[in-house]
Image (cartoon, rainbow, N blue to C red; front, top):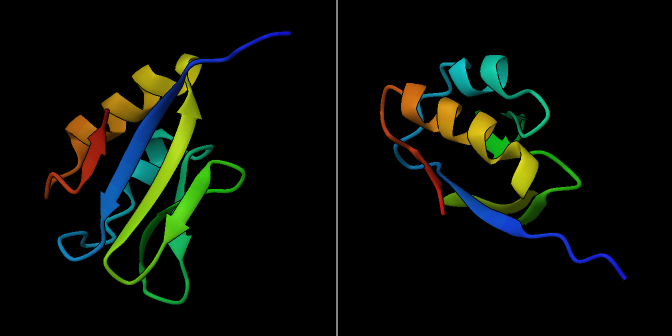
Length: 81
């Protein structure tokens, strides 16, 4: 049985300005939430999503891509743990 390490990703929708930088840099992880107009974690990685935050888990091989998007976020709304 294979066990994959997962990393947690959070988007703070209260500080997100939906500039689209994260969608451009990591389109497999982030997308526009049409309901809130903010960024959310894409399926199948999204685990929890509401008006305040979007939380997901991504495979270890996507962590660097997520960190690149997080460091490029102008409001610091993305955290990769």
